[in-house]
Amino acid sequence: MKVLAVSGSPRKGGNSDVLCDRFLEGAKEAGHKVEKINLAGKNISPCIACYACRDDGACVFKDDMPEILDKLIDADVIVLAAPVYFYSMNAQMKIMIDRCLPRYTEIRDKDFYFIVTAADPEHSAADGTIEGLRGYLRCLPGAAEKGIIYGTGTWDKGDVYKHPSFDQAYQTGKEV
Image 1 (tube, helix red, strand yellow):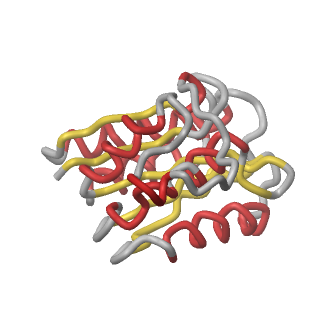
Image 2 (image 1 turned 180 degrees about the horizontal axis):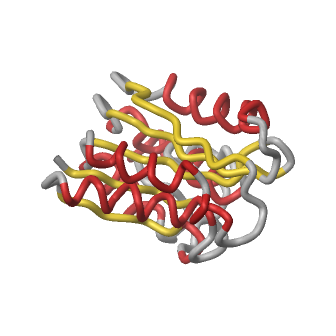
């Protein structure tokens, strides 16, 4: 299977980014083809709701999003990794989700895993982020939520290395 991880972390090597790598390490060991997209390194303009994409499926912005959409459509399994900012998903992930509008119905029959990291140690700190990600899945035909990896209680870069989510991400990837 093709496993695609979308890292919303604005910092390379940030906690959610590290958990993406761990998930993909497990999936690769299990024999799957893996790829990661770092949204922080991409040029993605926010959707302006002009709906020009209704005409031909193309967005008015000429940026990195068409390539990302192709990869989302082509993947069998998608991992969405988002750090929690002020008890919601971060901007990089939300912008990517909103820009799926031109072709979101083509992102069909996919299995999804969520990775969330937050400074607050309670899983409930990620509720807003999880609900936002689930809202995205509700719009995708045949999307199935398969699991959530909680990296809660990880504030500083690198905290995740000593967190139970570090091993959980690897194991979950192996079980895809």
